[in-house]
Image (cartoon, rainbow, N blue to C red; front, side):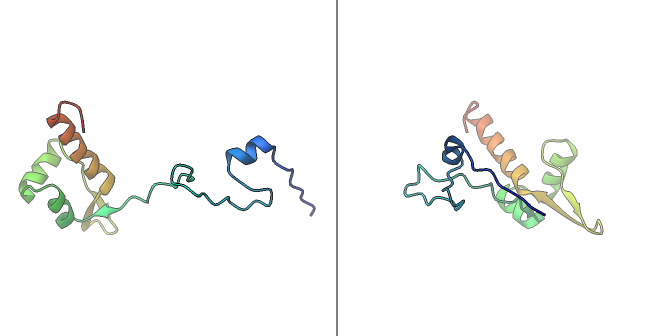
Length: 104
């Protein structure tokens, strides 16, 4: 099986920051750094959620029933629950923005 790779045009090489030998170019400054993908989403167990949102456990579950707080996801056999860290963080940021008149 014969495969050939066509050389990238100079503009494309510059855009993806790749040398002619296809190794990533090392950046010298923070401003020129290549964007990194976001960290993977974590799941938080109840004690971590209650540490971030300091309310009682019954208050938290009431807020979930009313649709005011993100619902947990069931883990494996359905006996354990966890919350998306991104959703909990978004809830906290929304509460701060509401307090500050739309500014986070």
